[in-house]
Amino acid sequence: MLIKNDFEVAEPVEKVWRFFDDIPQVAACLPGAELTDDLGDDKYKGKVSIRMGPVRMQFAGTAEITERDDAARRIVVDAAGADEKGRGQAAMTVSANVVATARGSKVEVAQDLQLSGAAAQYGRGMISDVTAVLMRDFATNMQNRIDAIEKGLNPDEAATSAPAGGLAIAFRAMRMALTRVARRFFLPYQPNRT
Image (cartoon, rainbow, N blue to C red; front, side, top):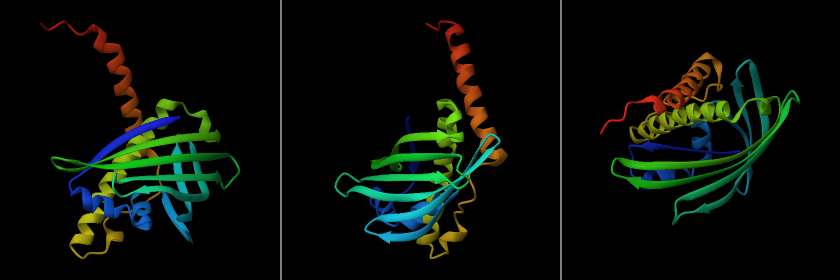
């Protein structure tokens, strides 16, 4: 399943691209992610905790940077892991492009995600909505970390990577789903304004 998101950061494109060179900093911005080991050669071990509905899953696995193009400001990461309780597996290729905007930078993210087991029971809409919420949180954490580093503060206090899930994410994803359904239902019935 291909999921695309983008977000803006109020920082110059060069600074945002340099931030992507520090994988531990990037991982710290993703809610629920934790790097557990640097394996060298752009390979890492880690964990990701996420809650979707009543199911809380914790995936352990590896991630590898398979492409880094400084000229195009593009990075590609392949990741794969299994739920620690044996309830499913996930594999994902994530590509991120950083482009300049009038207000700073835009990060365009494409995720090619394959799920099996308990996580696969959720529909594309629910997974897309949860991913969108996580990307918004990632963008906020990234901005906070960059600001903290600029001010000489401890970035670990600026952005946290609490487990992804809980009621807050569920309600935000549900609100997005309801808004999408409402648009489909009500937009065809809007009066023609000419």
